[in-house]
Image (cartoon, rainbow, N blue to C red):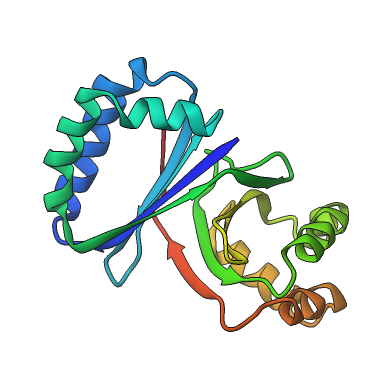
Length: 196
C-alpha cells in the first residue's frame, strides 16, 4: 500500500468539500489502483486528506493524468498558503486498517527514536490494543522518511475515543510508546470525517 497525506489551512472549506465530490464522481473511475481516502477539517481549519493507493506507481500515474492536474488547479485555491504532501511507501496497518464506519478520526504526526523498534512494538501491541481499546476500529501508519510518521486512527465516536484514551493512558504499553517518540506528537482531530 502507498499513502499520501495532504495537509494545509483551509481558506474555503466549502470549495474543498465540493471538489472532493467532483473528484469522487468524475476522476475516481479512472484512478487505477486507488483504494480510498479519509478527509476532514480540524476545529482550527487544518484540512487533512489521507489517500491510499495500491502502490507508489499507481499514485504517480494518477498524478500524471491531465484531468488530475486540472482538478488540482481548481482545488488549490481552497487552501490558504502552502499545502504539504507526504508520500509514504512504507505503510503499516492496525486491525485491518482504516474504517469508513468511523465517527471520529485522529491524525498524529511524530518522529520515532527508532522506527524499526516502534513498528515492532506496534505489531506486538495489536492484539492487546483490541482488548484494551474496543473503541478503536483500526488504523494506518505511513512513514515519510527521516524517522517521521503519520498515524491515522479510526474510532466509533469521539466520546468513546476519549474514554478509551483516559482508561489506557496509565498502561505500560502507552508509557513505552511515549518513550519511543523523539519530540512532541502533533494531534489533529477530524470530528466530521468523510470517506471515499
